Amino acid sequence: MLGCPFLDQLAHAHASGPGAHVVELEVTDDMRGPEGPSTWGWCRPLADCAGASVLARQARRPVVTSNLAIAFHSPGLIGPLRAVGVPLRAGRRLASASVAVHDRGIDDELVATALVSVRLLGAGSDQPAEGRTAEAGVSQGRALRRPL
Image (cartoon, rainbow, N blue to C red; front, side, top):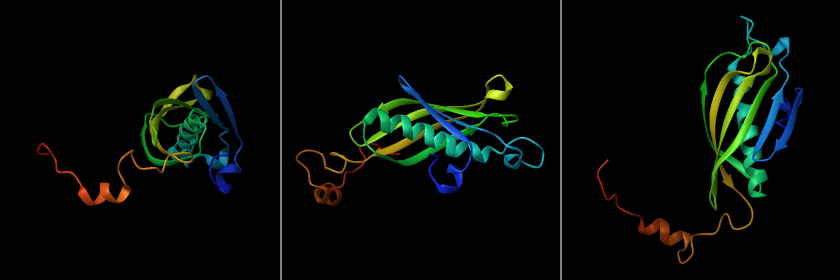
């Protein structure tokens, strides 16, 4: 699954290995822009899926994407596009992964890089820090110790 019924109709494949998750998307003529190359819009759901999948598998819990920052380097000309997600850090509630998207049809040319951040759901993720209630943490607040 890529995350929604529209995207799930596209020809794609998943593979997992030690410490990584790969999502590969076939690029068809109707996915290409007017000038020929595939639009960078296809990279975002690929990066999101690869990053969230590797983090969910590592945490053995469901996740929801909270942030995705992506940088585009070159257009995807031929395809398939391959996104490889690698975990960077995982805490009790949040985790992040690095994703690289390559065009397999052009010697694995780098198309985009992304940083995916997720919220870990399920067991213990919504529990406040020990010794604090959620209300106390919100009402007390904290002043900045140094100016911005």
